[in-house]
Image 1 (tube, rainbow, N blue to C red):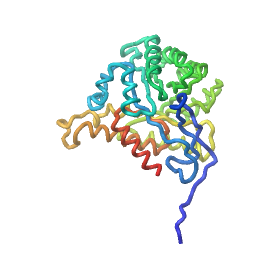
Image 2 (cartoon, one colour):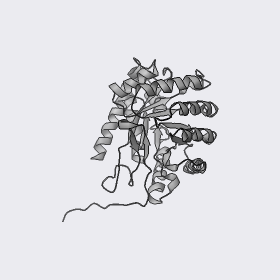
Image 3 (cartoon, rainbow, N blue to C red):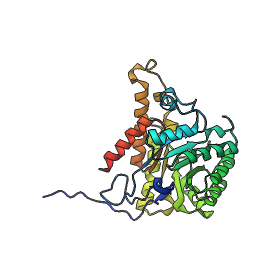
Image 4 (cartoon, rainbow, N blue to C red):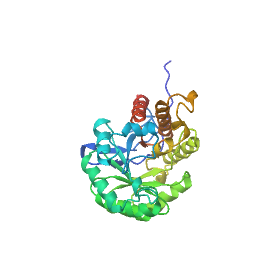
Length: 314
């Protein structure tokens, strides 16, 4: 007697959120099943990996990942083009970290020029992120949202302290919005409710429940993401149905396992391979938890994750 695999169906569905324009436009989300359960329902598009680019040289990145982009990282336009043309990135995440008051404190006008130049140089969808300084992001992201009007970018991160300003700018300029809360499903839900009460369409939100690194709270992040996805599918909770972002590279490439040299920790093996494996393993966990969009740093880690996605989709 032939074995028939049991199948689950769910009343809910993740919203499909479009990014980019013309032939390079992509959609994240849209599935009505758990991650990689295509045999049970619909998964319109595969998870999207965005390679991270910064507006200033990444001097604070460890050498193992800094070396991978050193030839181009002095200029965000060259860096973005390298990701698109040489590395085949399907999306680019431009982090405006140089605008942070404790970094270079670049102005909103500086950020606008960077975003405008990058948009002129690449065709793949752009994720535009601030420096995570709530007051400065309120100035910078408003200006860049207006400058990027017509390119259908994903902009953020809107947090409890600044969501009104950033959501209004995204709505006025036809962008999608990242809504970030601090590792709590109730806070995530509350922020989505507050944003939609402004008139922002819930179908244009991407939820960032905050990420972590393998060995540094990943299991807690995984649990929060998993609960959000189950609420979307099994409870048909409309507020929990935006796709999810895992902005993981910034967490992975600062822990001791990705910074300690082989001379310091000979039993851990060589550093570049160790760091790449750490970022790829962290990314794979978040994909299985339900994340549809990843922001990563090392090209070889991205290559490994793209291979993982292809194998899981078979």
